Image (cartoon, rainbow, N blue to C red; front, side, top):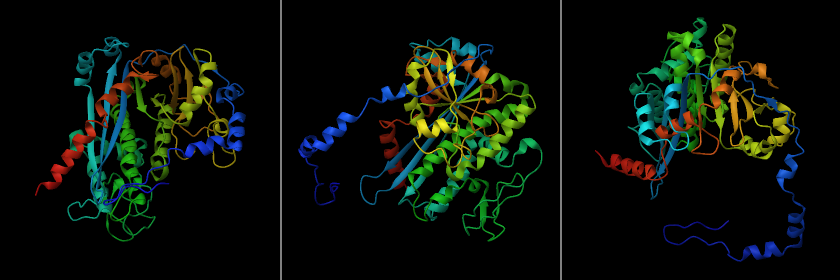
Length: 436
């Protein structure tokens, strides 16, 4: 690897002729000739495509959620870093969707639809070499997370959703918060009484927040936080924003809930220490299903290993079919790992993967919840799948490859582009830091 540029001397340049020796190598030439087109291998993969159900009716109310992130670094040493996060939730209905031209949507039509049916949240994290009111970065980020989840611009609804999930309020058992690692003494017996937001660690007596149970402090040092803290917060907030809509209908208009489709950009999963929310979500979806209330949730993966695999096998799929891979298929064909070990997604996913070939132009990697964990999902395991599949054709967008309109519109609200957004945020951060 070359030396990078410093303050006094330029960086080392890589050789522009170094590739010639590589191309002349007999071993390299022989190996390259032996490689095959991956599409030829894809044909050997056994995929059991099933016909999409046709008995369902399109759901009339659609919610979409998305988030965006920009890490802003100063241009001189020490390289200070701030993480700006924005998430958005939008609501559409079928009459509104019908007014949008799927090929060339008029921006004013989209503006009018979103004007009264969108809500968003924005926050910022001190990540490196930033002093926050005399606090260490570690405790400043903890406070920012707590205050951001309580965001008054959203009337504290997201905090109510976090408590609704963490304390499993829907079952009426008044449970305490499950034990977690204290951010002060590292005891793994920290907890809070039912419906409490702030309390004291039973071991050390220091102040703890309900948001500490998520575990953000487990990946921070005292004077810095990695960029993944902002990324993880964005993912968690997207999930909480989505379930804020679900909670509202559950508590106020439960009969409306089965008529809604909640669409999230990205997989229905929460990884690492943040997966504490996965089992409460599963238990809620299972409880709702047992009560005869279908909660239709859809995640779309646009990139990653599953999207890459669909490009290999999707063209051979008949139109109007779907395939939900099980543990063995995912391990061998997609992750290329041994099938031994823990079941795929057991601790992190509240939705299973579903490949869909809707028509000649649209192929999707979708996530649909099952309630309890299912190792090898079947159609009957997928909650609301019949209605969800029937709704797909009504929310297509032709502006982008395999696009869904709720995700596209949510992204238009939440988006923080590299330019000019990043430049504007950097100017704002610099100006704010100079104020007394």
